[in-house]
Image (cartoon, rainbow, N blue to C red; front, side, top):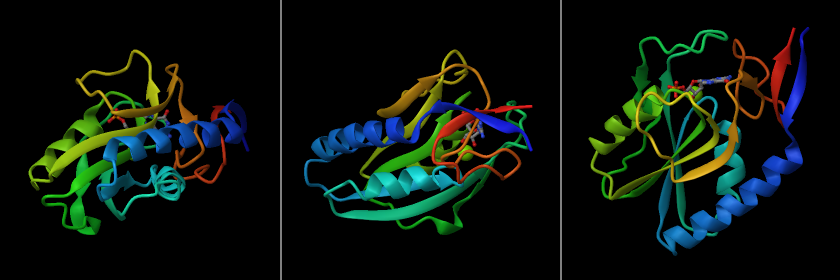
Length: 172
Ligand code: 5GP
Ligand code: MG
């Protein structure tokens, strides 16, 4: 089994999420918010974030998959909206694990906007430096990382490694 080199520790994630949650709480200023996680990678982030928001919240998920194994080129993106709650006229906070090329978030955002929410903001745990091909400026970013393939804290390699409490790089 390959080993994993730690890039961002559990403690660093915890600390950063505290800051982001405080910022989100200030920004929404008592308004109810629907957190929409992009499955499956956002699972940990949604769970850890929502528990730190002293706001009225709803939780929903949207499935959008474009990746196979460690390939970092997106092929056709498939959006499965079956787990999506009604977001019309609601403040939506879209939550994803990582912003790479921007394909996923842009397509998911198009879909969400077509449902006429009152507002849409975006939170990502990670943003890869120098990779964005489409303009996408998340409102909340946990960490900027170099262009490496990472796993853990929701991020997978071939659907494994998601349960790691930290973010790391697979070593052969
Ligand atoms: P984008 O559409 O922005 O190119 O890619 C975003 C999606 O690709 C993420 O939601 C994630 O599922 C996947 N992805 C991109 N980079 C990585 C990575 O380094 N590790 C893992 N596990 N998934 C990644
Ligand atoms: Mg994803």
